[in-house]
Image (cartoon, rainbow, N blue to C red):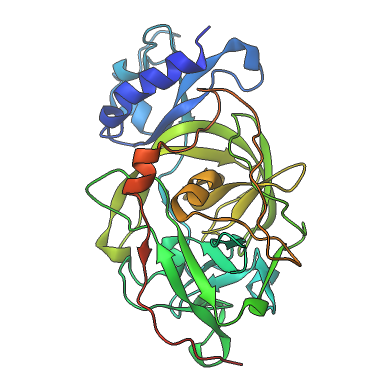
Length: 367
């Protein structure tokens, strides 16, 4: 039986090469058999239906099943489990919406937000100053930023794909964001928007109410829930962690397909990550604690690609905003486990991911 430690160390060695293989979209760590967790860990390979057949010979005439490609054979006692999946792509855009596409004041998490061109989801209301006085919208770079650049970007609620206009629905502007890169590995797709006035935002989450804080860690098998602009109220289970993935950003910022490291893959029983769900935040099933930020998904929407919200809190120096006061919500320690749980980012990496501040313009109040 393979341990999570063995699986993680093997994944670190092989993921780079495996992601170069045709049809492979992600390589991570999960359970060998989700129905029987005691059977240990495995390398999880997310691939399209053709990838495992691409390296195989023509079907043998015998009754034996077609052999797996050589690169999917167990190594160092660690088995591989192939999860058939379409490619991964960002989830901000102009897809059909739900009731969460409407205008709402004050703004709460779960509703449409974006620029004049597209819509995503308000992930969470956070604060980044020590006193907790400020209120900010947490969402994705590709939801709140103008093509991955430092250009001034107005924030609309609802977003442009849902009929929002700068004349009537502008609530603020881009504050800070992490720049996405083609050349180096990415860890989070994140941005914050600052409102014209504090009262425009309410520290609450659609349907589920108050979010009392966030968890620093979670593990494979944990159950989550969230509200997204397109899919609405959904639930999911963490299928793999430490997962390196390739995500197609299309013509956004001329990025094309870029690599993210150590992401979480969360599976739903129905679509959980469709166009417009980008930025939505997964909560723990019990306690409503913020856990992970959705930014991409499989083309069929059944898989959510998310990063731990603790990473956002580390990089942006933020906490969940507290309703009715100026204090900040503290993080919950959650479960322990060096390899079977997600981990905070190392201090050196946090420093290298320092967010970019958007240009400052006088904030003129709008209706």
